[in-house]
Image (cartoon, rainbow, N blue to C red; front, side):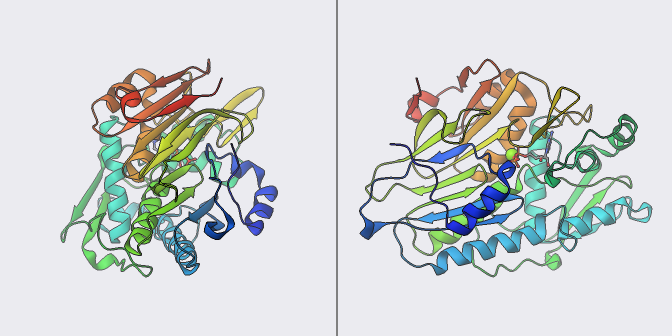
Length: 373
Ligand code: ADP
Ligand code: MG
């Protein structure tokens, strides 16, 4: 039996207020548990998206509060729009002529996420490009009021995109992703990490990997506090910790593109895994009869048009699922499938605009999936 996510009522009110932000592509099929073992859950808006954490095996609500505080903490590092956020300030510095080629300091978390962004930029040979910011900020999809930028502004911005023009340096080594999480992480620019941009006017867009990184940090925190059954949902970036309390896997539905959230195209059994979707129906608009979405081609500055509607990635770490869902979308069905087929323990589902579902190698052997008739 299908049920929608158990949103708390304030979040539900927000959701009604900002319906465009809520095209979640993943649904958790709630289990039929007796009231005594009802899960605890909290939702709130971060990074323009609804974050929902649900814990099935603890009644300690401070865990939920801590998770929301961690979201605040990371938003203040990775946001491209909050004025005081570390990334906003870095991008401002990167625009200045006098900073071209200069080493600019980075905190541990920003350095770690930038390395992930660079990794997927290299893997996709620039189809995914972590330096897209000069172009993506012209489109401004995160404002909810995106419009088509002028052709000249895109042409002007394009030469400032290019991950090969970024150099990073980490004197004391980047903090391990598996380092012990806490609710007040030490995150200082004194860690010895720097980045330099070959030319002025560049900037970083970590929007394609940040939610996955944060979801991983929330999972690490909950696991460190003994949680063994929970779900973390950051607007389509989902992590399942363990199983449902009855020991059976979580049932994760993939939303039918452009349909109501409860309309699913397939269900999967998921235990201890991240499930992330990048789709063209998440942030999009129509202008002069043409459809525009937020997955942009760094070569042209315009949205990819490659007959893909969405890519869903199942992986142990959500930062990889997030990076790969965007990178594989950018690469298209054939190259994206080939990339995933070479990765152990990571599986993908591509949905093409004829609504066909394409699975990567090994998917059927490792993941139980049922397509809706
Ligand atoms: P969402 O964050 O909406 O769930 P994604 O994880 O796919 O979806 O990330 C999309 C975001 O990534 C965009 O909003 C933009 O900030 C950034 N982006 C878009 N195209 C690219 C690209 N080709 N390379 C790197 N980042 C991109
Ligand atoms: Mg992504």
